[in-house]
Amino acid sequence: MMQLLLNQTVNAEVLKPKTIDWYGYQDSVLIQVERLPESKMGNTVCSGVLIHPQAILTAGHCAEDATSMTVIFDVEYGLNAVKKQKVKRSKIVTHPDYHPEKSLYQNDVAILFLDKPAPVNPEVIKKIPAKFPMIAGEKLFRIGVGMRDFKNLRNHTDPTLVSVLEKGVLQTADVYSISGDSGGPIYSSSHHLLGIHSTIDTLDGHQTPHAYAVYLPDHIEWIDRNLKARF
Image 1 (cartoon, rainbow, N blue to C red):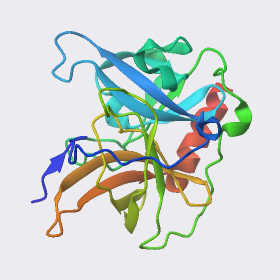
Image 2: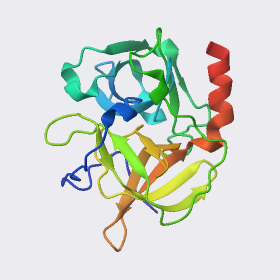
Image 3: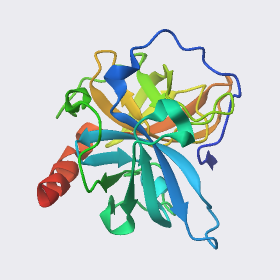
Image 4: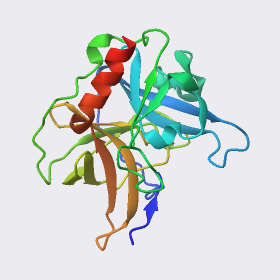
């Protein structure tokens, strides 16, 4: 039986980033998850992505037991950021078919609704395509805010697509998944928003961890229905 490790750090080595214009990726955010003291999960950090000036996608497991979630937009300042909004539990919608006791990655998606528009240029918010051809071996582009060099900042990795494992699920070879990357956006090489990072499993025989991501085009109906209900 495959053992799934929720957001486990599998490689402490940091992928040295090439020069990136982070202005074009202001849609990626840092999320501080607040939980009650008795929660076994404790307070954590997750990643997320804007899909509307007042809506953010993240991983469903990030919302588990959350009493509130604070979204940080000026991620370059880490936990000292000033551009932030608190999202109450009542404004967090987890996919109704996310059941972690059955699968840690199927339908592992949640929407956070903001009380006011995010303080970023709305032009950087990328649309989710209704369909997109997925080719095994294709290099993807993932952003996460997991702690690297003792800082929670935007970082990118370039996982390789292994397969469309099943409806709504992508499997990738992702060496640099770090705790805190969950919920971070995954883009195609042409910058289409395709998925959000979920979790990883144990190493395969080639010492390459396989990661799982929510394939967003398969969830676009659920996402659109929730957006229309709010706006």
